[in-house]
Amino acid sequence: MAIKAKHQRLVLLGVAMVVLIGAAILAIWALRNQASYFYVPREIVASPPEASRAVRLGGMVEQGSIRTLPDGVSIAFVVEDKEARVPVTFRGIVPSLFVEGSGVVAEGHMGSDGTFVADNLLAKHDENYVPREMQDMTGEELQQAMAEGK
Image 1 (cartoon, rainbow, N blue to C red):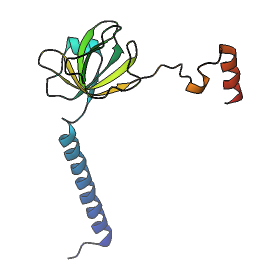
Image 2: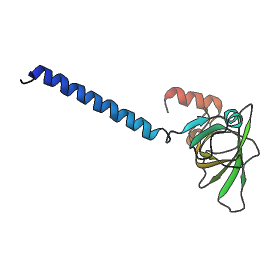
Image 3: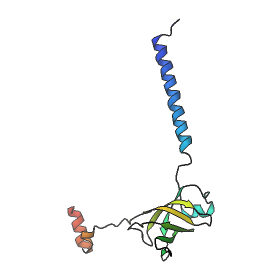
Image 4: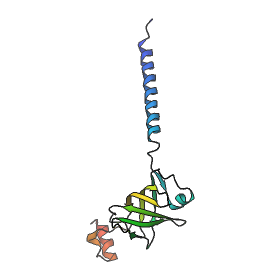
């Protein structure tokens, strides 16, 4: 006895759905350890992630905390929020917008000594960006130029 064409399509559709759901579950399972969690300083201080886990630390660069380490290519600084401070080290090229008092997102992991070891720095600019060509304008000239769409 042969299966009707309508039932064959339903069986094929059911098998395809099971395969797709299985592939999605397998992909999620495989990538669960690759996710990069975002923390602010108070969360890292209260509950530090395990040393091997890749995380992101976001906050403000503390005023007066940036210093170049003796090797000449590494820097150390402190990321803070209003409640906690986390020391950070980074080896590499620092973004041009990375300055004290600015926002930063550091990607990396916690070191065994409680210092965050950054592999990558993402600097945030402030909301009052002015193009280089317009920096010498007075407040009124700047507002007029912005209104004219320059």
